[in-house]
Structure formats: structure tokens, C-alpha cells
Length: 594
Image 1 (cartoon, one colour):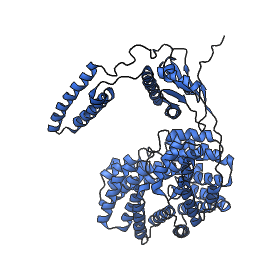
Image 2: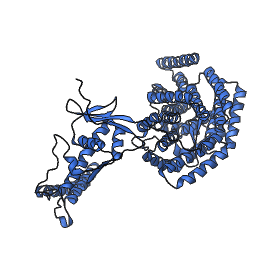
Image 3: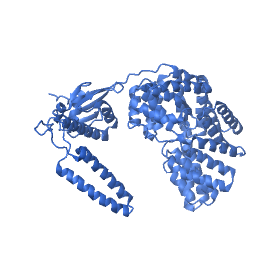
Image 4: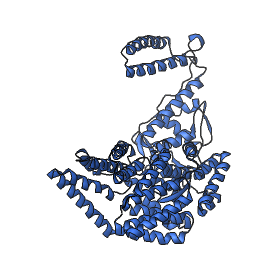
């Protein structure tokens, strides 16, 4: 493995040297030749470094339309491989347009491959089917094996996506034939690794073991950049099927480390699933909070979208994170009936319907049964025996270990807040006092007025004869109404100048002022009064807790989310612990040593 890595590094260094020499001599064609080979040394996923900049430099000075077309295609692939598909779109579109003008089949095949890479997201399946068919038709009459390899891999991937097992088998055989014809270790690596994926789908772990070992050897000989990613993915899938907990833990640790080091969310999401199946639910939960603490809408809709979301939904459903499970149902439902793949059919991760079933079952929805039946039917179609058996097996109930969280005063007059080992010192806020009191009494209702008096050093809500005090006095209301008149005049001026920015700002301010006036007045514009001191206490406690949670959110989003989910404010306030997220709260400062 190390020798192969050395060969790859040497080849990359030689390409860079050739590029810089060509640039120094002003030879655009040699620059293009070196630049076009740079992506072949890139693994899928990590940041691409300087490679896109070098290719773009050659692209800007391209001497011929063919060179410009191929360099545009290379730029598109490089950006997608580096995790930025949006930047790739314009270059892929230009490559297709130039290829159509040139009419050269080899150049067209290259451009079509770049367009396919750019349309790898979940919403582009129809385009992928069309583009892969065009690529297959174009490559069929080319003697160069590379476009044929690309065409077979894309047809294999789309066949898996729509669960067309006959087309899958045909493309697997085509890859075998290509490897036999060329004798290339690289072509054999692709044929063998994709054959290994299929044997795992049908539950033939003995054949998979042999094929994974063979793929590892072939990839080393070919110095394939994605060798480690492919073989780790296959090994983890095999460990999952045979129940090898030790191997699964090793792969989970490797995936977690790589995902964090390279910033690849899908790899971290896979690590969460592996930790879950390796009986380490606390580690799975930590990754779930890290990746989905703010919901699943932040997951980029690229090649890894379905893989990332389904992994996180599986963890959420198993560990009773219903908010994330519900998010998953909303995002995954449009893709029901589709397979979940890692990249270009590297590994199979079930069907979307399976994850919809798990999420709906956790949510207690009747649709869970419908999704169960459709998932079973899908697995029967493709012979996925292990996946079918897993679906019917009772769901595990892992015990999550409690995390330790500090929320107490510190000796310097602030508050220590956060998980053990990463807590921070925050200012002395009333809301932290209220949170502390609620956390001391889980499941108990605490009156907001009583709670407001617990913040030592902070004024509570005093009982006075002015319990019916105005929410907004006459001066404030008069100021609000004067500002509304000013805004109306400014709106007229902004409209005459077509100043959209000012219009939006003024309309927003006007609506906010109207809301303040509505809050402060009753019917007919009469000033509204507080009904009691209890009402003022309710509002004050709610605002103080919300402010404290906002401050916590800046430092620890997962902790803030946990508190928002479990703390309820009103006339009575309450802390309801979440059994799926157990916490040991440290609510008192440690005693000083004597």
C-alpha cells in the first residue's frame, strides 16, 4: 500500500513539474496535457487544493476548442470531487456546448461524463438517466476503454438507483469483459469492487471477502486514488452483515476521524451508523447532534444527500430523536422507491422506503406499515436477503450513556456552562438561575412568580399596587404612532426612487411597530393592562430563559437544543427530561478543598 502511495505521489509531482515548465515556456498545449491528468490523481471527497486553479489557468489560455472543452470538463469533475458541485455547473454546461459544436465522439463522451458528475444530486435522476444513455451510445463506438469504463459505471449506478437488477447484472458483466480485454489493473479494480458490492447486497459474504481482498490488491497495483475509500466502505459493509463488532468499531473510528479531518459529512454520518451497530450509541448520538443538531435542511443536496440523510435518520429513529426523524420523513418521501448508494455504486445502503418505515414507526404513524411493505418488496426484487431480514428483525434498544453537563456559578462570579471537558464561563444571567432551579426539580411545575425570586442578586417581580400597570405608556404609544407617520412618508419617497432595499427595511419596521401597538392596545386602540403580577412574571421568566439559551447556543448548539426541547415556560415552568438524551447535571459549584 505504501509503495503504491509513493508511486501516486511521484506521478503527481511529475505532472505538476510538467505543468509549471509548460507555463514558463508559454506552451498552452503542454499545460493542457498536464492539467488534464491532474484530476486522475484526486480521491473523491477531500478539498481539491490547487488543482482547480491550475486547470483553470490552462483553460484560460487553451489554444484550441478541443482543449478548452476537455479542460472545462476536467474543471467540472474536479469541483464535484472536491465537494463543490455548484461551481462545476457552468463548466460542465460549457463542455457540453463545445462538444456539440465539435461533433467529436471522444470529446463528447468526456463532456457527458462531466455533465453526469455535475448532475449527481437526488433531484437530477431523470437527467442522469438521459445523460448516461447518451454516454453509453457515444462510447459504444470508441476503441478507447476509458469512456467505455465511464459509461458502464454510470449505467450501473443508475440501474442500482432504480433497482433494475437485470441492468445491474448486465453492466457488471460488461465491466468484467472490459477488464479481461484490456488486462488493466485499474479496470479490474472497478470490475472487482463493484462485483463485491453486489455479493454483499445478496448476502454472499464469503465471496465478498475474496473479492474485497482482490480489489485491494488491484487498487494498489493501479495506484487508484479511491482505493482506501472503496475498500474501507466494503469492509465496513461486510462487518455489518457478519456482525463483526470489533471490525465495525475499527471502521467507525476510521470513518469518524476521516470525516472530521476532511470535512465530509456523509463519512461522519456513516460513522454514526457503524457506532450504533457496534453498540456504542453514545458516540452515534454525539455525531447525530454534530451533523443534525440544527435539523436536516442543512444537508447539501449533492451526490451524498440520500446517504447522509438516511444514515442520520436511522440513528435518530433508533435513539428516539423524533424531531430529526420527522425531518427525515419530509425530506425522503419524494425519493421513495430509490436505492441509497455510496458514490458510484461503491456500496449499497438499502432503499429509501426502509428509512421512511423506521422514522414513521418511531413517530407512531400508520404509514410505517405501508413503507415496510414497499421496502420488503424492493429487497425481494434485487435479492437483498440480509437487508430484508434486518428490516423484519426487532429494532435494537441501545442504552445511551448520560453526558455530564455543568450549569452552576463559578468562583469568579460567572457561570460555568457546558459538557464536562468543554464548558465555558458565561456572564451571570437571570435565565441561568431559572434554568438551574428547573433542572433541580425534573418533572415538577414551578410557579413563574416564585421562580423569578430565585435569582440571587437579580430583581424579581415585586408585588405592588400597580399590578394593572400599562404595558406601554402614553408616551411610548405616541412615539410609535409618530414613527409610523414618518415611515409612511419615507415609503412614498423610496417608492418614487424604486429603492427596493429601503422599501423592504421600512415595511419590516412598520410591521414590527404595528405589532407592538397591537400588543399594547385592546379593541378600539385602548391601552391594554396586565391582568396580574403573575402575568408579568411569566413574561419576564420566559424572556430571561430565552436570552440565556441564545447565549448558550453560540457555544454549544446541541446543549441549547436539548434545553429548548425539555424546558417549558408559562405561568408554570417545567423541566421534562428526555430519556433518549440522559444528562447528569452538575448544578452546584465544586466544594473548595480545605
